[in-house]
Image 1 (cartoon, rainbow, N blue to C red):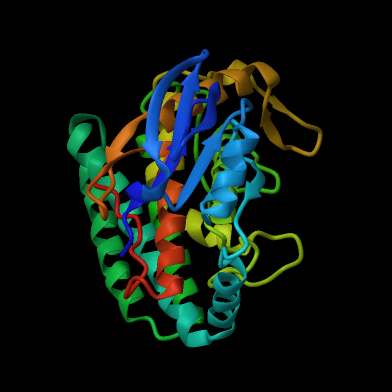
Image 2: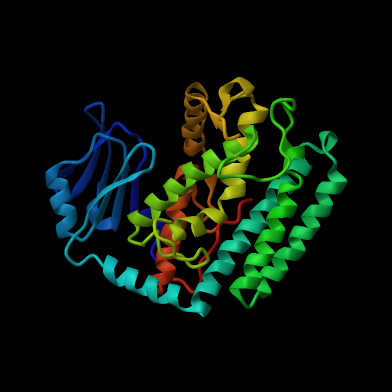
Length: 343
């Protein structure tokens, strides 16, 4: 298996990349802040607007090093690759696996293992951190139910059964979500998950955050050469990024849901930051979006130890790590896709 260190991620928006001999040089405010030999890299992913020198782009193309440009919000912009880059071979393998019920089920099962494991982790973390303020008996009961559902997912032999277990787990998990809101209880009340449109402030934040994270998953899949529209659990539909939605599942609870709860409980946003439309939809106002996105950028910069790689990474890079692991599995470099199991 190739190591994650072979991919260079540039997350600062004001970094410029240039070439010096056989090295990539990272500059910030016209000062060199980093230098790495190109022969140790298989790809470079850079976020922001400053860019890279033509000489570096040519060198990457000649040496088959993928150079991917993302916007500061994670939107895929462009990619420079060499002639021998195997995107088409990787994607053909992806399409064949997506057409195979057996192969799709194996990957989808791991996505769902990650999702339900992480939902249970959010509940268990709340029991540990806020035992005196929560109905821990009820939370523990739901945690036990999710553990049983997790075992059922591991044994699921059809996509229909897998989707049934996923729906059951989501219903149990969200039945406790209102408990996890510890501040601003008058303004932020959660009853049930609703969308298209969201009908309350909590659902508005969940939907907005899922959209942000979906965009990151699309960019991540593009950056490793996978087709974000050809999924394994989410079926094909024109205009729907099915594989990105697959990848999103295991990241919802530990990344998006915990961020929503944090912003409410730490009063990053309040009731005045929302508006209700004539159709009942509740949305963030422009002022609320600015505060929320600033907090989201800070969240992306926070670090954790990746549970599979056992390396320190930023939260903003987690979708790219998982996309890279998925690509390696599809290429045959890994025996199975390792889901993100938050600890």
